[in-house]
Length: 143
Image (cartoon, rainbow, N blue to C red; front, side, top):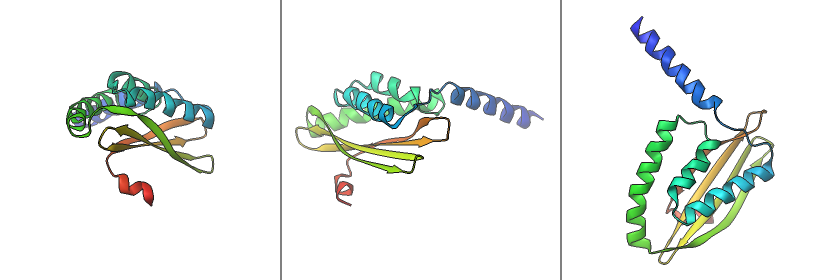
């Protein structure tokens, strides 16, 4: 009984988090969203970056907060190794039917760059952010 109650509470809170997500209505708006996020991200304004991401990302808010905290910690290392941010550049977009969009960017630094990937999913009601990932796997850009 207690386990069922905990499961029910978890599902209730998870569905509330999903219900608060705003759908993006067009592929052009997906592009606008990634550009807005990248503007903040390249300026290392992580608070605004994650604030924009969470509008369309159906993860529980506490998970997004944890990802933001981890990113903030890791960016201290990135800056010490890569130098100052010098902006961002759009690399490519892949669209699968009217269901998935993947957009790839790089953030340029003085000594290196980071790859940034967004994947959006259209469930028929609109687009939501399905994945946001950054790494230094530059060689993957050549595949």
